[in-house]
Image 1 (tube, helix red, strand yellow):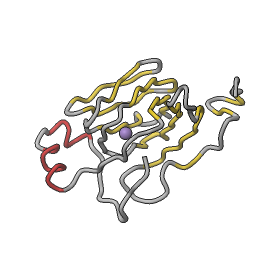
Image 2 (cartoon, protein in one colour):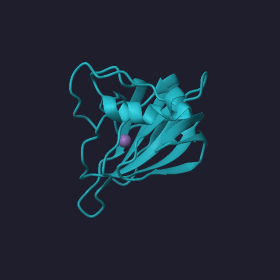
Image 3 (cartoon, rainbow, N blue to C red):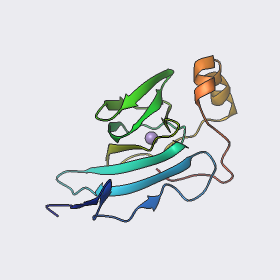
Image 4 (cartoon, rainbow, N blue to C red):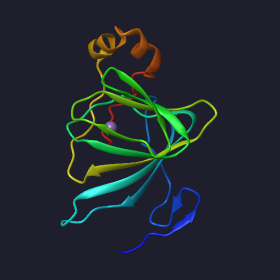
Length: 156
Ligand code: MN
């Protein structure tokens, strides 16, 4: 692959638009496109995620790192116990083993590129104790959207 055509606004012809993860209620209204699948000489993947207005990603943590660049709309991200506003072309790094969750601003579609290594661990979801610990901080408690998944999740 040398070129992936941008076919229409925020769609690339590399991949179908996938619903992000198949099961669970710990995320909402999010799609994923795999833009670059990686190769041995460059073992990374570039994905594009898009959250519908009011959508959010999973509250999770893992050893692998995300490098994110917003390219559509605006939203917010929780990283550890910090909440940041994100606008188009802002960059944010999600460090290892750090709780994180992305949220679209109300009324706005929020899209970002996310770079990860091909070889990566599966995300961990908070247990009741960890969730209670996170919610000790009222601003974090007010931000996070979390309901226990109905089934174990093994998707990253
Ligand atoms: Mn993650």
